[in-house]
Amino acid sequence: MWAQGYDPFGNPLWSTLTAAVPVVVLLGSIAFLKMKAHVAALLGIASSLTIAIFAFEMPAGMATLAAAYGAAYGLMPIGWIILNVIFLYRLTEQRGQFRILQDSIAAVTPDRRLQLLLIAFGFGAFFEGAAGFGTPVAVTGAMLIGLGFSPLAASGLSLIANTAPVAFGALGTPVIALSSVTGLDLHELSGMVGRQLPFFSVIVPFWLICAFAGFRGMWQIWPAILVAGVSFAIPQYLVSNFHGPWLVDIVAAVCSMGALTLFLRVWRPSTIWRSTSRGENNDVATSEPPATQYTREQIFKAWLPWLVLSVCVFLWGIPQVKAWLDSLFVIKLPVSGLHELVQKVPPVVAQPTAEAAVYNFNLLSMTGTGILLAAVISSALMKFSVRDFFREYFATLVVVRLSLLTIAAMLALGYVTRYSGADATMGLAFAQTGWLYPLFGTMLGWLGVALTGSDTASNVLFGGLQKITSEQLGLNPVLMAAANSSGGVMGKMIDAQSIVVASTATRWYGHESEILRYVFFHSIALALLVSLLVLGQAYVWPLTLLVH
Image 1 (cartoon, one colour):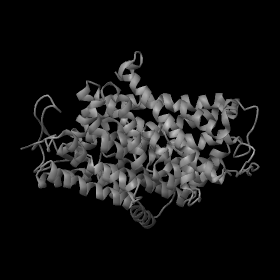
Image 2 (tube, one colour; image 1 turned 180 degrees about the vertical axis):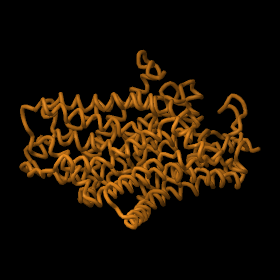
Image 3 (cartoon, one colour; image 1 turned 120 degrees about the vertical axis):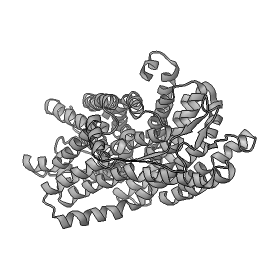
Image 4 (cartoon, one colour; image 1 turned 90 degrees about the vertical axis):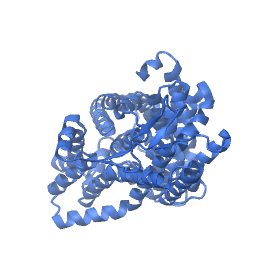
């Protein structure tokens, strides 16, 4: 048994600064040295092992096992989700179904503002829910360029729209990872995030159109914006609170796009915007492109793989289905040399508590397996041969290999930080911010995503810290862990990874600084609004009712 020590140098300041080294190495490598994410993550895990072993005196074997445990969880189930959902996307692209999808959305209305709502907000949220990790910005940015939007508008607006859905992106990956590193109940975390973000699911569509068309242009279509926002926010709340984090964005996005499409059949704006920019110095002023005519059968076939995906993931999220699949196959592996051998001690916990370390290899009930089944069914419907199926799967594995490495290294870093007690050391220091911590803690989540490019990575880095600090201050740990994720979503639009993805998708290479300037104010302002909401949830009635 090894007991954690939270002040290894007998000096709280030095101990805290030392505990923060892995985080500084990771974030600094990305933000200032502009290293690739996987390189920065590997440097982060190397520094976390060094600090754990030599500063916090954690036995080297335990530290190494903690890193391996985290990396294994990063690959299965989280990496398993990413690999299979991107594989499904590539299959639809190969058969031209994705192009039909794009054209079917654009044909709903000639008004550019409404097309922006459907594509950047609605369809972008769908891809955030299905894949995440930069896919929505890449897809919607390319689609907006195809409709005539300027590169700056296509990039910046895609980034602004890709905010409210981020916490439940990639089939709930950020919340799942947050639960893993904090030990908090997954459904409680999902529900809390689902009581924070729906407010912003209503605000962001208004904000998005205002950024594009100005206040007057936004006001001309406010009924449609309200329909899009409310029809997203209500399912987001219901699914996150009564089902779980997996299908939140997919269900909400489908409801939003469906409600807006139906609404536009009975309502039209008095002014139709056919230009793709505003102001006296319009960069783009195109006429409406000729619409490609597709049959209902073609459109249905284009949507069918994503409908199959939704059904499979929904089934895999049902507790009874998961339990049945686990009854068929599950391997529980206590990590020998780590399981219940690390002891948390006061003041972090009320009494000494042994930390469990059990890896569940429940392959059949993993969400990624449900996605793989959806891909198999969809490939048969699209008439892929067995040979082409495996060839494309291997190609997908090559494409996402560095992303998988990054995810594994990020989770390894988070687990070493957790088992060594370094997160507790930082949490005890942040507890000194007192009653303002809900504001500060939410902005910490924003900073984490802004620098790492991932709400998942931010949750892994700071989730344990949020839990420990809130417990020290007498706050609800679920509230502050969820605030880390909810505040983080507003940092997504300014992270280097997303901006590079946007500039690449819109073929506007070398203009990343202009995109950053376009979105920076929006990111700061929205993050502060989330922080104020969380502060109100902590102390101000009736917002405190949202905590329970």
